[in-house]
Length: 307
Image 1 (cartoon, one colour):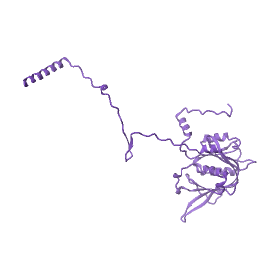
Image 2 (image 1 turned 135 degrees about the horizontal axis):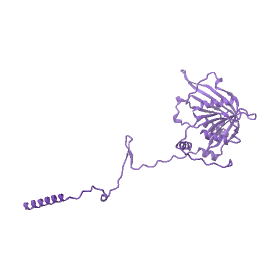
Image 3 (image 1 turned 30 degrees about the vertical axis):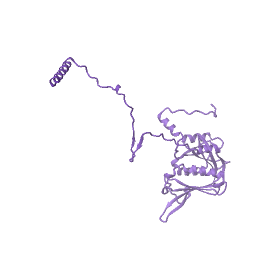
Image 4 (image 1 turned 135 degrees about the vertical axis):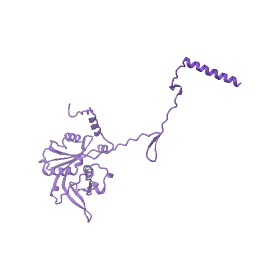
């Protein structure tokens, strides 16, 4: 079979396999997005450290591969798509290092088991969490507040798409109504000073007696934007399309009282009494027949006497 031929998915043979396949099917309400951190053929210490610290921030909704892989996402992304599908991750962060592209980092996302869009960044400056004087442990379920700084995010088409991609990467599709202001501990500041430079800084909110203070805890990274691969408009609209919720069927003859109890009316068709199975009586025996005749004769004699 050639690589171009598509293989049909195999059906489940067990109940557990059926549940796994059902969990992978598209859902009307999606859960948090998972991110895959993966390494290329060669990596540098700075990009590995940055990927590790981002993974620790997103550790609730991320998976990391510590081995090196011969992958070139912009040339051939089939293996990367397979890893994302296997790990159930819709986002990925690919790090590599080469003579042509040193300290390379690629952030992207998938749709329908294929690469939707991605951007290639060059890590120009990096400062890890260990280099900051105040090392504060990040809470386990801390949801970040994302702040975009720069006018280019408002009018540059390339940066507008980058804004959407980075929002998906750090936001993780957590519902707004589930986030409380007291639970916001992290602030991710994304700054674009020009068309080719991007800075991402992680800050933390700390509450003191004097008030609330914002302190940088790292990592701090400055990137140069290299290559980009954006989805076509039709494909992007298809990826953003949300299916309409299925309308619940109308429940006839069912009402709910003030307490909330469910009450219904039951209608039964008129029963044919001719087919009703009644108790069959036994045939009168000879002694019973004589008794019946005696009673009838007594009743006739009583009627005569009355006359």
